Length: 117
Image (cartoon, rainbow, N blue to C red; front, side, top):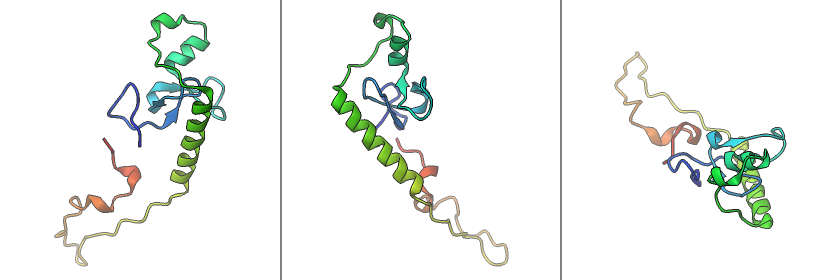
């Protein structure tokens, strides 16, 4: 997964519908509703009439590249929604014995519970 343009430690969930760059949920707005592609904050400010000199907008990609990236992001989002996480088995003993290290087995956690850096 890609990282956000402004927050390198955050996972990018959205692609800007104007410039085509990857952004996290904090960096995008949905000015036309959730059915339309989001815009990053600098592109939304420019679309709203704020001068582009003060917005520090990233370089713009070609319209064809933006559309391709939007389709890829939508397909990946649908694949994540369709994927059902497997249940995590309990390591607690039959008599309430907590001898198993339930906190040490991170490989069995679903991907949505794990932060990727």
